[in-house]
Length: 370
Ligand code: 13P
Ligand code: 13P
Ligand code: MG
Ligand code: MG
Image (tube, rainbow, N blue to C red; front, side, top):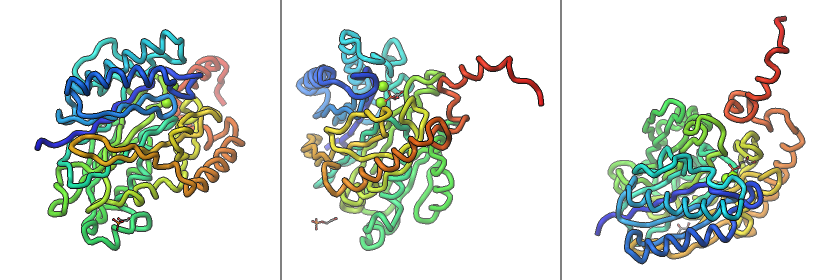
């Protein structure tokens, strides 16, 4: 049997109201189009989600990663949804569709992509994490914890099949370079990079050679598109998505989820210009209202059955995450009290792609030497 590919392709094609959420009407347009593609056999299965105002398409198929066919399906779906958004005069209709016409691959055209091709195991738990109001680097801390932190993932200590560790593919998104590094040996060097999450982002995680799983098949993949580097100016934060496989030589589902129990500070939130806590929420709370946030993540859990998606389970719809959410609200409130001051507002370097340069331009003739 050919390998299976899971692709999550996402775009913000319009919000209701402002940047709060994707309305039902758009979800329906996307579902109708993907139903056609499923019936015609182009994809095996799909689910459509919204992470706040981002429209997330989860598709399974056998065309591999970077498939023109699959990327075209996603692009067309976003175009149809954007048309609907324009008709409804939604906010930022078509916002993330930066190119006028599809040219073979959605990368660099606005949408975010996380996809991976692998051999489906006897039982294949696949978890999708969809974020809004933050950046790809928001995944660095939880992904690191899942695959490398023994205080998070008990299996790293008590399951010999995890002992050899994992390989992290890390991208420098400013220099367009990547490096492969191994845990546990290079853990400190890895942290030296990924702690700087606006520049260094984990793109993929692989098993090591000689283990239970093939070393060339990823076990996690994260979208790393930087919208502002594509468009040359701020056009909305590049709200990221990730796919994580679990169990049998990998972190258990509960170990993967445990990594989100700490609402760590991420950048994004209001106008993509503020630090705030990442709040794990159930699907029904995937809407960003307080100060357009706080940044949040939903988790959708599936088992794969020959590419068919069994599920989803709404992974953060659990009172066990109430404390994390409460903590996030407390941190949100604490950060908000800083108003326009750093470190609530992002440091000036990160504000370069916002509207701040316009303020500097206005004041430029009033500055004198001291
Ligand atoms: P089961 O024994 O229920 O399969 O669970 C094993 C496990 O990985 C729990 O984290
Ligand atoms: P999005 O990136 O989710 O569209 O949000 C942009 C924004 O400005 C929120 O205040
Ligand atoms: Mg938006
Ligand atoms: Mg968004």
